Image 1: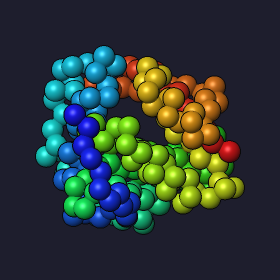
Image 2 (image 1 turned 45 degrees about the vertical axis):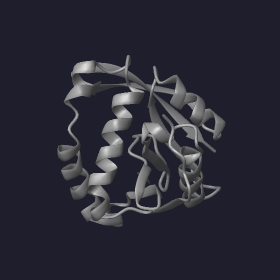
Image 3 (image 1 turned 90 degrees about the vertical axis):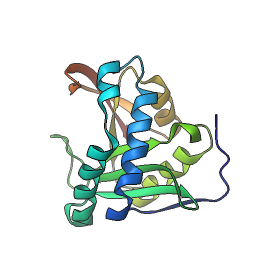
Image 4 (image 1 turned 135 degrees about the vertical axis):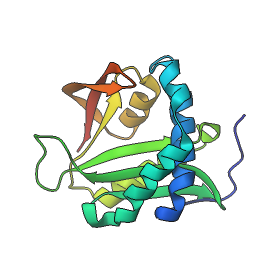
Length: 174
């Protein structure tokens, strides 16, 4: 059941947000990737292990050029997004990549992803190329990215997800 959002705020995330981000990350994967990623892998996702990885990442802060934002309603985490330097071999100097954008499934369809995306686009600026990778089978996400001006650029790759090779498609915005 969808939850009511009273006051959406988006702020920079820090190490204290690791558990909240990990919880959203795991729940989002377990809902969004049903039928795309193996059920065994999705069931194996552990919020505590994910929290340790997120804590380590967030402790580095923006020194590595990666920034993470947390969307929340009061103290309740709703979603998060992260962006940093493009990791693609053909990226230009200064190109940025959206590494993640995930929501608690109970908040899907309430504009939280839209506001996170607006934050990322505003941070990137109008003249900075912005890319992201999305699983080819994730039609919901692909539609969302197209609505925000991203288009597939013809570059694809296979990514190992839980022991399976899944096709990813690169989208760009400019």
